[in-house]
Image (cartoon, rainbow, N blue to C red; front, side):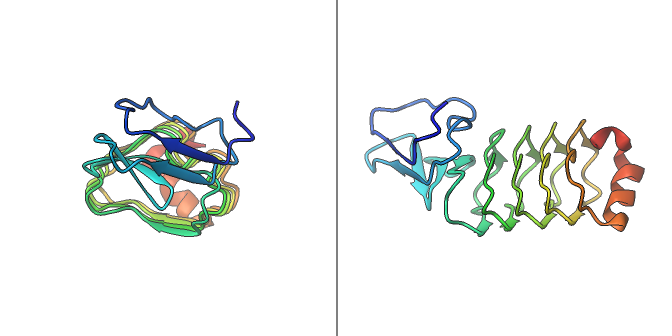
Length: 173
């Protein structure tokens, strides 16, 4: 665990970063990538591949209350917004095809999300413990929501809850 870590600088020499690199750093506020790094870039404390096709993670204590994923992003890593408790609203890139495992886990301030039209899968625990989540708009393209994708979301409105259960069954809780 790195609970006291608040800032991280990724040097130019780093060429590989694993999945969920800062998942155990709940107080991380700043992610900085040295400009000479050829593989990664950080914009507003969100880490991306240099080509901006993949969003790797957001610093959990970044000051964002709203965030718009850049339109170039085609994939978001598992647990990318894990513990981003300040995040109230997010706009996803229209080119996403899936929402991975624990992507928005414990985003306790998130109130609504619209899933883009090309998404086909919502992963295990993707919105687990999003305790303020009230509504979610899911296009017909979503064919599967895996187990516990909405567990611990007690404030989903009755219409949203009914639609989710009808499409995906109670396994999503």
